[in-house]
Image 1: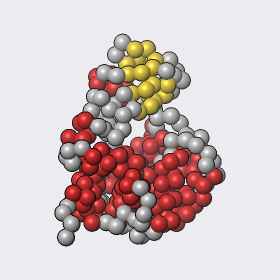
Image 2: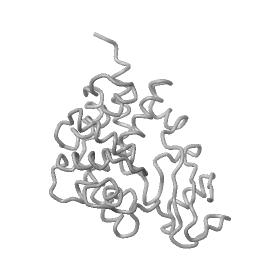
Image 3: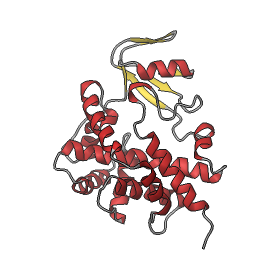
Length: 247
């Protein structure tokens, strides 16, 4: 495995079309494996471009300020840990801003199970979770439904971690992004031999990008996170909610 730590090398790697996210092997439609293979996150080339365009269009419909207000006032759920409440709050606020049905506890739990298995794993509960969620995405197109689930899932853990760090620190979300970024590393694999700076990377070789220390927690280049503004709005609203004086 190759590890890249400098900002210049990481930005070059993220812009290199030969370095792609780890591929996801598909499975039966409606399964966790199928979901991973159908979202934009794990695709590359023209398939990724098509799916990313759809995701960007979905996110562009969201009112950022309205999302912040939702995060500041949304009921995150009943009981559970603070981290669990943060995940629920993120999911309920974002789904509402996307115009999806109100998420009940079962839907929130299903999204959390999918998030736990998003980057791998074979928990049978994840397949059942995906089946529960797809009908809630308000589209008859399976690929679009999968990518709506993907939008929610990808916001879940990283944004909840940002909220927790900001709440436990200065309360300033932007400062927290600089000091305690929620995403510390990204992974890529070379689909063909390539070179980044002075580093030769062989075909099939894995690449670890230490994005946290250099301030690239949202990535950069053609695959920069399209939900950055929404993640910040969610975090700011949630921190505002917890820091507001009781009445």
